[in-house]
Image 1 (cartoon, rainbow, N blue to C red):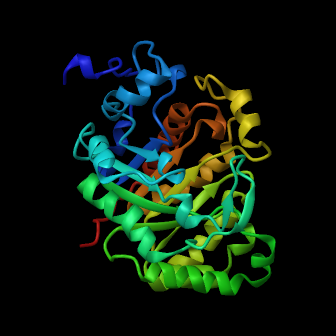
Image 2: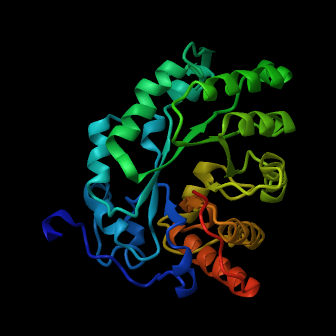
Image 3: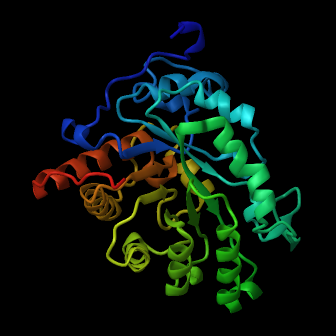
Amino acid sequence: MSKAREPAPCALRLERPAGLERVSERLFLGSSSWSFPGWEGLVYAEAASESTLSRKGLIAYSQHPLLNAVGIDRGFYAPVSALQFAQYAGQVPEHFRFLVKAPDLITGASLRDERGRPGPDNPLHLDAPTAIAQFVEPCLSGLGERTGVLVFQISPLPRPWLRDTPAWISRLGEFLARLPAGPCYAVELRDPELITPRLMRTLRHVGAHYCLSLHDRMPPIERQLAALDALEAGTPGPLIVRWNLHQGLRYQAARDQYAPFNRLVDDDLATRQALARRACATLMAGQRVTVIANNKAEGSAPLTLHKLAEAIDSEMAGRGDEPGVVPT
């Protein structure tokens, strides 16, 4: 790899526990981005600016022994082209996977003004042809085998819509059923009212998944895991998690409190242990686990993932069984 293309060599301080080697092909850990100068010594061995990391940091990030996945959040704000996705794919090894968020153009219920305030209803909300043309096809064409999970993050729905959640859930099911078969689709919510047995039955019926959203707007992990049990109905499926934000904090407050994201400020032990237990069970069942952590979860995404990896390794060592084989 040409050094001219790299922002800095990888830091090797945060290794994956050796015990996780046997599940490395189905345990995907990563952050929601890679362009944080505060990660010097954690991900990057040398200092680099945010702009340099934004353009070149993915190469070094993807070589890190702990990290084999990353979230592409920028597509939420505007569609990403197949060429841009291909450029990302060309910077990472074959085993690396991307979790990609769909554009708000598709998932947002309301049109927003320049300040982000909701306005009229969005006519393209859950419009399958738009989702296929603006999101699914560019992802698959550009990322190819490095496509991991395609996430539809549903921003908070208008209050009147939440008075009739069955109607919206039916609309979601019809939307998902019209998407091309094959990719791993997941739905992430911002309205706790939508976490219902009806939602889980709908996702199961269309073959989509529930993305655990660890976020201040959403219930704690144990309640979401209970809902996931209803979706899986005794047959474990892939575990998809976006560990976004510490409970009790808003995004800007967390950003101000945790920057420059080089240390754990608020250890969330309860969430970590619950997630480690579920990840261990999922891996032992031969299914994939994808966890994308944000700096705003505990203070530093790489350190959050390192602690989580250690907790998963401890859980697996305690069970002592050989992990299952991925179903064909």
